Length: 237
Image 1: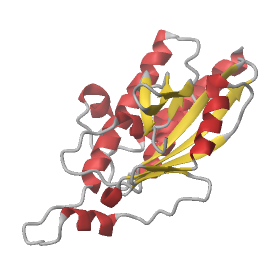
Image 2: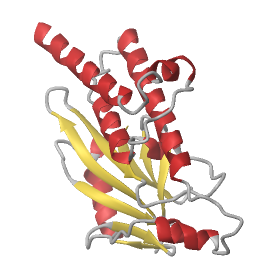
Image 3: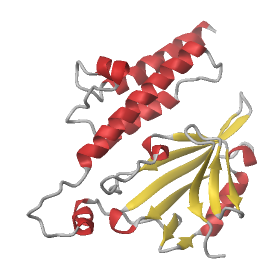
Image 4: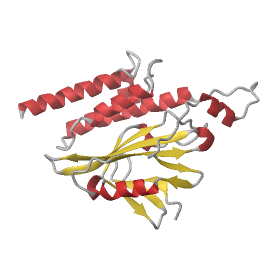
């Protein structure tokens, strides 16, 4: 038991340090107090993803109030960092620039080429739908002892693509299954004043996935930030 406590404490220290490193030296305290701290100039999406992953390593299954509050505080700080990074990475507007906003976004985006087995939504068509539906049947709580994985790519036209890596996870000791979702927004640029999707801010842990014929979406359920999340529309029926 003592060994487990030491391991949990170590994971908390690692997560706290990674979150602290996102912010300027004296600003982490401000973030915890009122969210006013600023991220470092060197902070990038990879740093934020690493901090989020470290937070996910902390065990909150025992539901200790102190641990839950600690994790909530770290997640809130990561959300602040993500929002500031998104603002910093927005393509600057110029009254002298005659190029369209779409052209500016395309020039700034890194190129992304989907893999052969990626589930791709583009122009209202869904490629590799059978791979998605096979994963849906066995992943997370729908299956057991399953470790299959897929990549979902949502093509948003001139704004780029949103990428989601989904992997079915299983803990033999706890006899629990879930789906780990890692959003990647590095190939996507939000438009000015676009409402931010908090689902994409950090790795997610969802219970299962299903096809909602009534609403017309493939959905993830029991996620950290959403009870249900519309991942993809049902197309090609």
